[in-house]
View 1 (tube, helix red, strand yellow):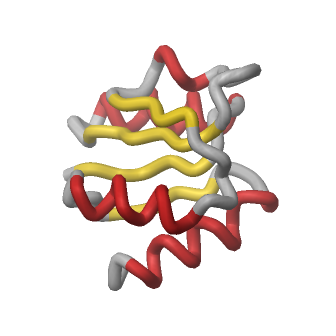
View 2 (tube, rainbow, N blue to C red):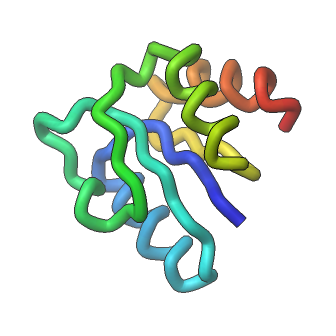
Length: 87
């Protein structure tokens, strides 16, 4: 199983830690500058969280099974990507 985490702050870090405990691979999407979760996820992509086309493309190529929003700001991009993936 693989999940995409939109955002790389404290919540993303917490989600990545829990996902590892559950043997779930994580892909994280956010700008690298200021990222907190980048060292905790399996794959980190330095991508604008609003570039839903790019995030969708990467998620499709990696057979992502779920999308996680980390803040109110990431809810809409997560929903757009989830819909594009048929989740």
